[in-house]
Length: 490
Image (cartoon, rainbow, N blue to C red; front, side):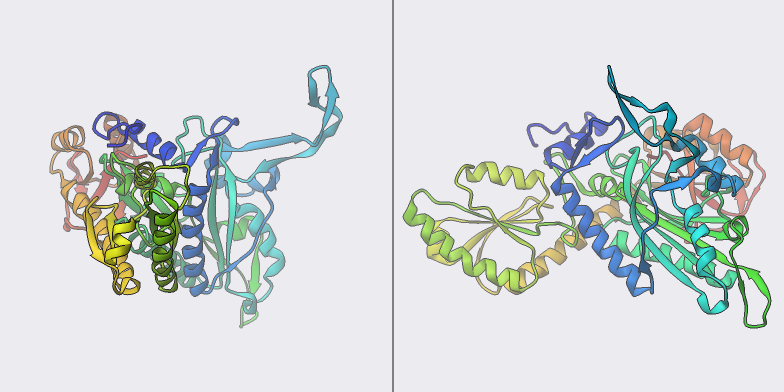
């Protein structure tokens, strides 16, 4: 176990924060509730962003950028939307400061005619813009994504999982028909599922949110739900079918091929830096961060070992060809040849930072044509010959990727339960945690009661249900169409 990392068993929340600190991912900022993302954390986000951006563009989407500030009146146009975000909005009321005895004060003469909202999400300003872009069916569909930051005034924050300001992407699309918009919503959910499972090695359950949990202003909200090692759920991404709500609120219409004027149909979808929190809690251990190779900023770190200048020259010369072979094979390689840190310190630090593979090379290895190879996921070490590393190492990285996914999947299956009564449901939550499938009568009253009494929420009504069939609600005994997925969550 790493010296400065609290064990999961002792205090899971502190373990999570210790991982972030020791792996140099992020830190709290002078602004309460906001964070500074350090280079290690931002490099991880960049890899996530780049893979997602590639997937978005492969499905026909383009990137654009919209203003950070939104006129207050825009949020008033869609009633459900403003109600959903009103308590989270940061509001700008004045435009400048003046010098004073206190240093600076707000200039009382600079009050804005209309307050500006720092965007909590961009539906309103984007749909006001789309009104200018759309006149005819020939202008559709519009498939736009934005990489941006947003602000939601959170009172209880936790690094990556919930902060006042966070980084994300938000897709906003406009379509001629309901069918197209619904297909887009489901398509992007599948993109998120693929990314979570194939790149993050994080298994997810897909489904639709209940009415009380759906996005403000949406007709339906679909989600991917993941299970963390402490048995709590994490909503990792959402895709929303918005119907014509925003088109009607902002009067966005088009003339179809028959000359009729109609409102457009819409979707929106997004994931954020919360994914980094999910990645940490899915794979990491008491020794530090564990990263899936496909997203790791550094996939292989090479640590040379020498005692004198002659050995240094020999070892670095031997490593040069290894480094080139791996780089040519597309492996992200780092050589740490710093003299001011001992090899043992480097080993520990790269383990804490989650580098998937570590190669150590000393003068004897150079003489014998070997390398010492250490896996981060299993912490196994082996001495192997320096042969065909350009093939062997990429294959091993893929093996590690699969091993991490399979371990997370096995853990999720172990921690997934079915409850046939309310008492059994509460007992499972208190003693085991995890995902719990149970029958629910479909009413918001029952959903609220369960949440208040157990702190568990309906994560989704899953598309693929391991417990199919109708039954009776565990609370009321009323008819239930299917079991739904419950969990305590972040």
